[in-house]
Each structure stands twice: as C-alpha cells, then as structure tokens.
Length: 238
Image 1 (cartoon, rainbow, N blue to C red):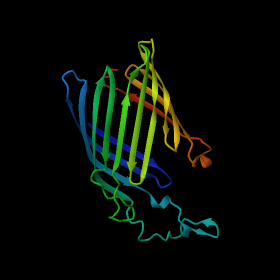
Image 2: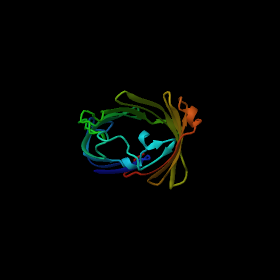
Image 3: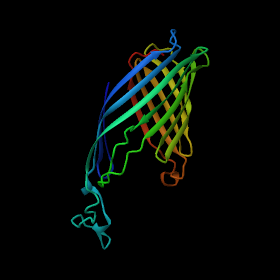
C-alpha cells in the first residue's frame, strides 16, 4: 500500500509531508485461523519545512516594540529551513482466539534508521526511535453488548505514554446502523479521553474529547481537544 500524509502547524508554518510505501505478510499458525501472525514494513521519504520569517526573535524587539526589519541575530544558527530524509518503520502483531474470545497483541518500531533532522545544520541530531506496544480483546457480554478493552504504551527518547481503557459496543437493530460505541481511556498522569461512535454500513464515525488532568490543566482549565474521525473499513468481518 501507499500512505501520503501532510500537516502544517504553528506560527512558523511547520509542514510535514510524507510518502510511504507499505508491505505486509500474514501467516496462519493454526489451520483453523485461531492463531495468526502479521509482519509489516513501511519505508519512504519525509519533508519538513518551516518559514523562519514568521518567527519572533529577541533582537527584533526594541523598547518593547517588535520591528520585523531588525536582524534576528540568528545568523549561522538557523541554516536550513527545508529538510528531506529517508525513514523506515517495522511492526508485528499476533491474533489469537481463546475460548471463542479474540485477542490482539502487537508492537512497532518507528524511525528504525534514526534519520538526521535539524533546522540548525547539526548533523549529530537523530530522530529518536519510537517504540509502541498494544493489546486488545473483544469480550462478549450478551448477544448485543461487547466489551473491547485495550492498552497502549509508547516511548520515544525520554518521553513515554501509557493509555488504558476500552469501549462498550452495542449492536443496533437497524441493518445500516450496525453498532454504537461509548467508552474512554486514561492516559497515565495526563488526561482522560472520552469517545463515542457509530458504524454505518462500512463507515465508522467517531467523536472524542480529551480532558486534561495534568499540571497543564492550570493553563488549559481542563479543556482539551475535540476530534472527529471518519473511517471506511474494507472487508469488515466483525
């Protein structure tokens, strides 16, 4: 497959453009498909670009006023506003069915080749590898209700994140609207994420909201971000 991402953020219009090629291998470890192994790899090119002219530097403030024509004082420091590098990722997962209950477990390692990335021309700065691990199950409560617990752990450099929680899925009687979801996750020492959603035919529509509970809440007053997801699923089986 092919994945194309583009993003632009911040006062400096920091943009990220990625073109990545993916390949996956799946193997049955049992003939009845109750144990499956999946391996994947993704490689491609990334471009990061930023507009230094949109930043504000100390030397450009005179008598409390900003003067854009003044020199930034950053000559020889910010040397490259356009970066282009090759990147590679690896992943693996195992699907198992135990007593008719499905389980998924997997992990990934991103930035395997530790590409160099610095707008300051420092070729000693690597993009740290990003490790992630997840586990998920679907536990039937009755004919209409299913509990979907999950955990996610991620680490990059000295930063890490651990989420745990899940969703409750309710089977709807409508032939088009198949399932309704509600639930949430706790991001350790950071935030609570609430989510609701619905499956319409092969389309999943989701709405989530983060409630900040970390020290950052003093600035955000606990307010988080709203996210809307629209996902089309090919070959849905469950």
